[in-house]
Amino acid sequence: ELERIIGISLWMVGNVLPFVLPLFILASILTSTGLVLLKAFLAYVAVLASLNKFIFAPMFMKRYKRKQLSNTDIKDNQYLHTERNNQKYNSLQFVWPESVNRPALNDKPVIFTAIPHGAVPLGITCYPVWSKLFNDKLCHWTCAPVVLKLPIVSSFMKHMGYIPAKAKHIVDTLTKKEENVGVVLDGIAGMFRSDKNTEIANIKQRKGIIKIALRAGVPIVPTYGFGHTSLWKIVVDPFGILEALSLKLDI
Image 1 (cartoon, rainbow, N blue to C red):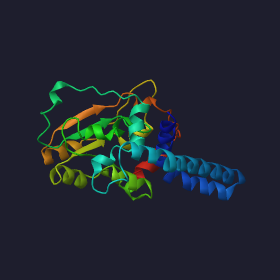
Image 2 (image 1 turned 90 degrees about the vertical axis):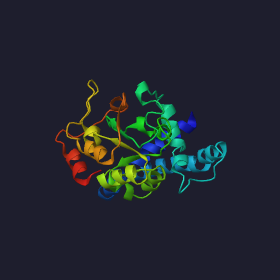
Image 3 (image 1 turned 180 degrees about the horizontal axis):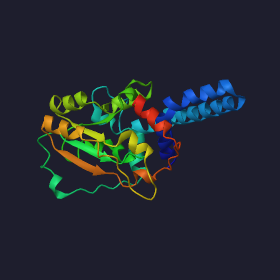
Image 4 (image 1 turned 180 degrees about the vertical axis):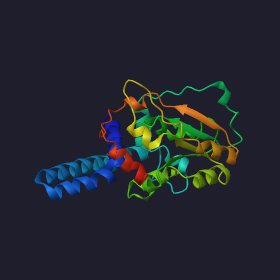
């Protein structure tokens, strides 16, 4: 249980660190309160990272007889302990129709399209499932290209098989590598436009993925993550400034 608490917390911090840290630094320059908050935040991150590095990560690697992350075996990396804990933490259950049972999708790559995004689409982070349940092809999930250029975070995401959410990269993965691709269709809109009382999916303008599937000659398997929008309460500015900025920067 303690490992899970540390793992999920560190995973969430890692997702927001590249965006939050500059704000804390700016606040520390402007006010003394900001400096206190920056020190507290850095101390919190340091404690989580230390516990993970020196206690839980070695325990996990020993348990599964591993020494380090592989630069070539992405499937093996998809069993990272934070991702394993994400699955257990949320008590995930999968339901699918018999029509996609093996061997229906054995012979060609698949595009998994998931909605809604919510604050964080934890349902997709059970990465090994997408790489072995319907066929044995490695599944590459997509993300904003800029995320794969960020320090620390980009290294982990690349080790888990992430690719830029651009048509060329998706098509090349499907046709040249002949491997699966996963896309969270509503992306940024799905992060900002959520309602605790109503399930909302922003997909009417997401027609590009259909063109990609036709061009690559692969099937689309639509998936819905029930609970994605209720895991956290999302607080956004009423003027839509943050959403517009995220769309502009593609993050």
